[in-house]
Image (cartoon, rainbow, N blue to C red):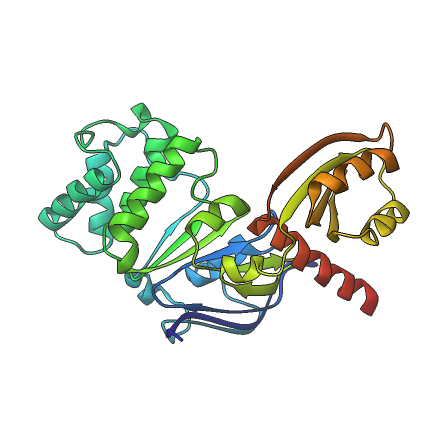
Length: 311
């Protein structure tokens, strides 16, 4: 197994009475794109800020490159946060040269590397354009170029494509993975499981400040039923869900509000039975191949059941 770049053991961190991290334990191997997957409030951003040496855990142990996170390690790391932090009055080139100064780069080195990165991220010829004149997607690509300017060994991405349209998102990831992928470890925090399924080599499912499970997307999807059925089911009850779980061909059954997630070997037989079982209550049905999202709901629902049983 590759050497661990990030190691967390039993981290606990509180905001007032709320535990943002609650026994968080994880290893991120070197040279991979590793995804932290979970809903808002699950603890992903808190962990990213700790790896970036912006917070310290109240309990537990955290090591980055074998050391406790500190300002001295920032020369080897870079962070792209959810929100852009760029001055709209500066040009793209000025932004990169300023970032170069902050990391101790010479003006010529920052300019040369900056121009290459602008080309990599589809911003060639935009060096003199003010940031305020760039689209939201262009600003995110510029933010990525800024983060990579000093060639960090670890890139921390906290929901970097929030608010970016699908075309811009694809352009950003294509540039990062095709041109820059093999140069560093990437730790991605996201609640977009489809995005993670497409770019991550390993992932961790996060729930309530804990790591539920880790693995490759293909391994986590292994063992799922062949098809994923998502049902908009008005007023669904636990008794109804319990009965559906016992049907032949039905696998894991979980809920997200009034959306029921079912795994099935034969959706064409399952769906008509659902309509007959709950006439008038089924509002929508979608059928897809099982995905990382289905694996997430399966693993998280299992942990929730174990926690509730222990109370």
